[in-house]
Length: 124
Image (cartoon, rainbow, N blue to C red; front, side, top):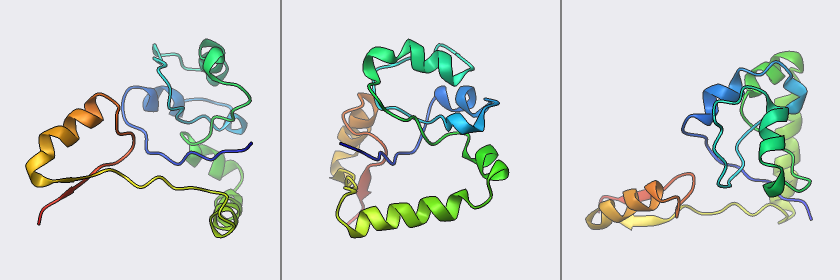
C-alpha cells in the first residue's frame, strides 16, 4: 500500500529539518507523536522515530533546496499528484468545519491534535 500525506508544518520541527544538507532525503512532517528534540539530521530523526516509521518516505520540508538541485522536480511531482488524484488513488482529507459559535472548540481540536493541518471556521 502506498500513501501520500499532504500537510502543512507548524512548530519546532520546521527550522530543524529545513537546515539539512542532504536534499535527497527530502525530509518532511510525519503525523505521529514524535518530538524533534532539536535533532538537525534527517537520519537521526528517522532512527529516533523508527518504531513509528515502517517503510515510509519522509517528504516535504526543505523542498526549496531540493528544487535548486533538481529544477524539474516540482513539475514532475505535480504531474504525479494530478495522476493519482484523477485515478482516485489519492484521497485528500477535507478539513473539519466549525461555525463561529464553536471557534473555541476548533482551537481546542488543533491544540489537542484532534484536527491536523487546517480547520475552517464559517462566519455566516
